[in-house]
Image (tube, rainbow, N blue to C red; front, side):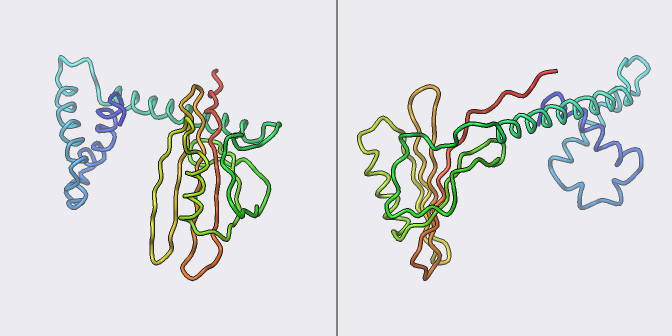
Length: 206
């Protein structure tokens, strides 16, 4: 949590317990260690603000907390707007040219862009008759000896094997490609998702 925001939020959160006397009715909630710490901080700040010699008042701290939260929300909205602008920007959409070929790959749609979490990714989906392990092995063989970082995870859940493989360049700007291959138990086809993040856009300034 933001160090500036923590004591202010402590007052905001704890205020409803201390001033409205909800603390006694919410006994289970107060067992939370983080909330207990925030209540402790709020109690100490409350005592300081109640002092006749203290220039800090609860109302002032609450106002500061609201201002910080509003500023953070504004920054988040700017980031979302920048991502949306990057998503709809015209121009070619393609994975990095060094992306390994996927054996027996059949695309289920065109290469496209999509916002995933806090970034825009170029995505190609499709299927392959090869198993996830075979696809992972093929990708690693294709980049053997190249100046690329390689990270691989082999996972099996409920009889469904999957492979998640990350490749990235060692140059600046850094490029990354992620291949996810999963086959449901009993299936003969592997679902493949290949994606690469676009450079993070800068949020527009006021």
